[in-house]
Image (cartoon, rainbow, N blue to C red; front, side, top):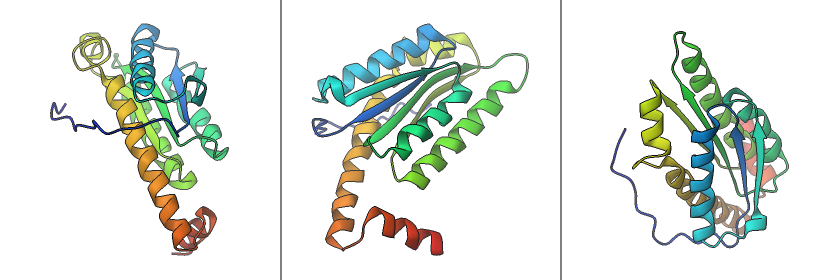
Amino acid sequence: MSQDKPKHDDLEGAPFRFAIVKAGYNGKLVEALYQQVCQTLLAKRVQPDHIKTWSVPGSGEIPYLVNLAAITQEYDCIIGLGVVIAGDTPHHEIIAHSTAKAMQDIGLQTQVPVINGIVVTNNLQQAEVRCLGPQARGHEFAEAALVMAQHQLKFQEHLDDLGLSRDSAEDSFEQN
């Protein structure tokens, strides 16, 4: 994992709304990620009532609720949070690949940025470092969400300036 993290000192979250979908499995670790995300969003002046959170059983269920949140068009960015730790079978790889692909597709299809905050590790120690320890990935997920919400807003304004709506841009994309 890269330690060369981008710096985002100029992030301002006040105008944005965020949805968070978090998994129940590995609850202590996911809760730590969730607290880091909320802490970072609030520190960047996102209003508490502009953060909506849902819980799902496991990471495999995250994309379903992410999709429902995205199609409402009520959120500027959606964050999926989970922790998947390898076991004796390749189940963790299946969950990692399928959820990553699903969330990427949801973002592209709905034009709502989606942050994949599902931490996938080979063992509990790696997960603890990424969720409870010095790497604290939840802060990164929140900063990524703020950056993507800003990009989405700027591009929407640009599309408006060009006389294109989000729908007409989608239609143009689908025709090609």
